Image (tube, rainbow, N blue to C red):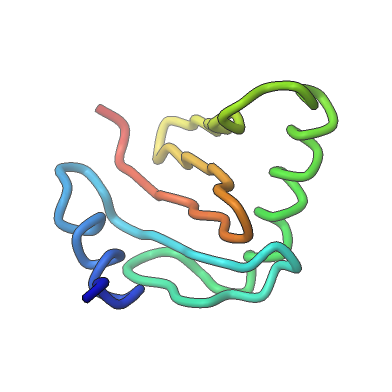
Length: 91
């Protein structure tokens, strides 16, 4: 039997440096969030993915979007109907 979504997000949260994870559907509805990830931003994150698809329409698999700052890194990727954003401390 497949793991539940929350169980998968718990696995991601247990990785070194991960402080938050957000999972949303393709319309920007937050499905689940853990740690520092704010479900209110699910729509904005999905918008980033849609714009990346326009920049790289023929890229398979879909590109990973990485936003970096001194305080944190945000990694975003879409797979099928689900978008996952991982919030990490910089290494």
